[in-house]
Structure formats: C-alpha cells, structure tokens
Length: 349
Length: 260
Image (cartoon, rainbow over all chains, first blue to last red; front, side, top):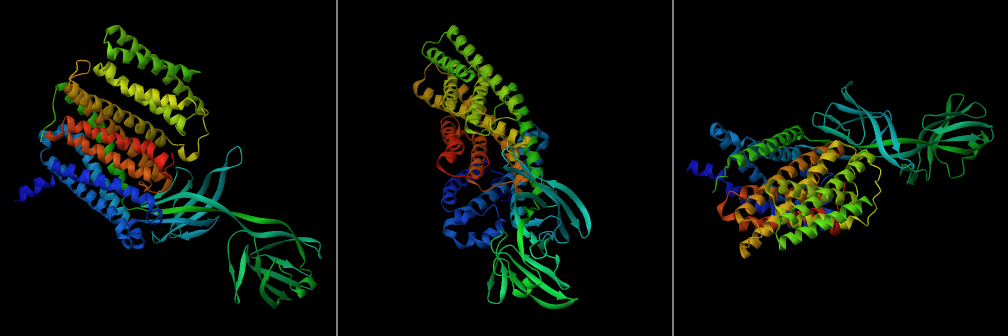
C-alpha cells in the first residue's frame, strides 16, 4: 500500500497531469488577471499573505483560479521532490541523470522559497528618506536605514535616468552595511532588499529679503530672525502647502502652494506671541511693525529618495534553486549528447 | 544597405531551398546553403558591429529584437543543418527568419541610448537565452508540422518520421534548456532591479506558462501515447503559447515588463 502511494507520488504521469491542468488554469487566469487590474494590479506591491487578506479572499469567484494554480504547483513541487528523493535512492545506477534531477531539485527549492517568501516576507513601497534621515525597518526589528547622500544621474537632455542613494544599514547604532544603491545595485542584507524606486523634491523654506530692515533672511524650520526692538521670530515649523481644518493647521503636500509657518515671537527673551502664519495672507500687523515684511528671493528645495524595502526569507533558497537549475541544465546538455552518441533511447512508460 | 543585402540573400536562399524541395538536386542544395551561410555571416557581422557601436547588445526596441530573433532562428537552423543535413526541411525557419527581417526593414535602425536599468550582463544573457530558446521552439514547430505532413503524405522529399521525431524532441529539449537559463537570469535581474524575483506582470506569467508547458513536454516524450503525432500537436500548441508571449502580449495587452 505504502509502495503504491510512493509510486503515485513519484509518478511521471501525475507530473504531466498536474502540469497540464496548472498550465490551462494559468492561461485562463492570466486573462482574468488582465481584465481585473483592481484585484491583481497590486500583487507586486504586496506579499501574497497581505494580498490574500486585502483582495484575494474578498473576490473568490475571480481569484479561485489563483489559489487553485498555487495548490497545483505545490502538488507538482511535492511530486517533483518525491521523484528527486526516489532518484537519490537509485543514484548508483542512475547517476547519468544527475543533470535532470538537479533541475528537479532546483524547481522544488524555488517553489518552497516562493511560498515561504510570499507568506513570511514583506513588501514596502514608497518609503521616503531625506538626506541624513534614519528610519527603523519595521520588517527587521532592531535595524535602521539611513540615507547618507543622494544624487540623480541626468542624461544629455537633462532627463533623470538613475538615482544614487548612499545608504547605511544600522543594527542598533552599529553600521552593518553601507551601499550606494542605484539601478541593478540593491542593498541586500539577510532577507532584506532595498532598491531605488523614485525621488522627489520638496520646498522646505525660502530665502527672503526683509524689506524694512534691508537684509536677507531664511524662512525655514528652526531658523531665527532678528527684528526691531530686540524682537526674535523663531520658526518652529514650515509647511510648503497647508490648510486650516477647524483650529488645526495640517500639511497637504510637498509643493509650494499655500505655505505656512508656525512661529514664536519673543522680546527680550520673553515669549509674546505664537501661532500659525499663512505666507500668502496678510502678515499680522504687529509683526510688520517689528520689521517682518519680506519679498521671496528663491525657494529652498530639498531632494528626497523614495525606496522600496522588501524582505523575503526564501530569497537565498530561491538563489540556491536557480544555481541547481543552471548546473542541471549544463549537465543535462552534456548527458543528452553523450546518450545520443551512444544511441540510448529514453525509458518509455 | 547591409540590411537589404542580408534580406536579399535570405530571400534568395529561401527561393532556392523551395526549388530544391520541388526538384531535389545536390547542386541546388549546395547553392541554397551557400546563400544562407552568406546571409547569416553578414547578419552576424552586422549584429557585432551594432553591439560594438552601442557598447551593449542592442535589443531594446522592436527593430533590434526582430533582428536578433531572426539571427537566433538562422543560428538554430544552421545547427540542425550542420548536424542532420536538413536542407529544405528547415524551409519554415528560414522563411520565418526572412519574415522577421522583412518586417524589421522599414523600422528605425538607430540604436537608442541604454537606460541604466537594462545596463547589466543579466539582461544581455536573459535576452540571448530567451530568443535562442524561442528559436528552437520555432524549429520544433516547423519539424512538428513536417511530421504531421509526412505522416499523411509519406513522401520521399521529407525525412522519415523517426528522424523528424528525433529532431522535434531535440529542438524542444534545447529550447527548454535555454529558456530555463533565460528564466534564471531574468529572475536574478528582477531581484536586483525591483527587489523581487517573480513579478506578476502578464509577460512574466506567460513566460512561466511557456516554461511549465515545455517542462511538461520534456516529460511527455517518455509516455508512449504522447510520442509521434501527440507530441507534434503539443509542439504546435506550445509554439502558439510562445507566439502569444512574444508578440500577442505586446500587441493585445499591456504589461509592465521592461521590454514591453
């Protein structure tokens, strides 16, 4: 009985049946996938477990093929794995098929790695880093990522073609890896892969000319402006685009549309006023009297890098599978011609 | 100019091969092969010059991929011709080479600057293995058609069924091996470029279908019932999948694969 089950698990015909059904379902499913981008469009941005929770499980009539294909591939992986183990037991007489069975092993390892990575891994897109900023990596507790420097590579017509982000990966306060990440050069550490996604520019302040005092000043977070009568204006926050919601002032986006500053005004080191000032609206009269009248000379812009941070614990296993596939293909090519030369014919079922 | 020359030589080779298919003579066969060899040599030189000029294998637009695919088809035919003396049996592949080259002729031959994402040897290998794999699948398709034809006609013009079956199996096997390497290179490239080794874009899904299908075919040849006619039909179906993956997705659908 056990022998019959084992024979079924190793069956060549079972492999063909599973492959055929998986292929047919995947062909049909790929069309469903194409016509329902709202369901399947985010598959690359999410881990499969997150996709299952957010989308897959909610539209089973359209996603059932996806689970079925996955199940069939898992069965095919099991069948292929059994074939490989069966071959291992007979390796002394079937060693000439090493190449073929390395391909089998490679396929099994990749299937295991993909399922492992899909359910235990994470995908995180749109992580914004300013130069000098350090952020914790949620998927890798105790680890932090710091953007040390950033530059764009422009082509002859001035169009950006690449982004170079100098990154430091920290474990606690210890730098464990420093890489300049750009196209085809990721930061890979343990199960983490960091790749550049895009970049942007935000207005963080203005260089201005104080007209009443006839001197330049900087309107940006943390800057201090000395006005008349020992008055100091300290800018606590700068929002390039802000709006009022009730009594609160909230940031909208990074473009300089409706800038606002949160200021504190002190005279002889005593705070006399604090509050939000929208720079496109008339300035408070008492501040104008202290000399806070200005014309904007230029915006102060800061470039930021947008990174993709993915973790995949199965990544190295998949690489091992790929190496097995490659070596297997090379061995198989040699053995194929060797067998052809000897006039060997394949076993017929 | 060179391109027109290559096209003309392939056209002449096809015509002479066709003549040979109707009136098999050693002189005609030798002339056809000489023309084909001249065309292939010239195309190889042209491809190498473009590679040298660009500093990378130029396969980043439709003209370049058609040029490279037609070269891979010609290389595949050359392999079978030298190994099995196929002669006019490979007429379909030579005709396909001609068709691809002909449709590439009116296109812009300028080499576009390489974007950094494609500037990696992984991309070069991915492309080389992909198109040579496709070329062997095209060769298998051609042989499968001839197998079905020979089974019906039993003509002395075509090779016997045993040889055609052997050629079909070999073309599928070589195509599968090359396509496996293409998938490996593509996956490693995707991991370093996008942070994941398998993308759910339609092109990648169909490439996996191609791999799975031909993987199944490599097993099906061991099943007696699937040998011969069954295998020939499977080969034809497989080539339809390949054609859809190479052309159909680009023409009928949208994909975020870097080469679409």
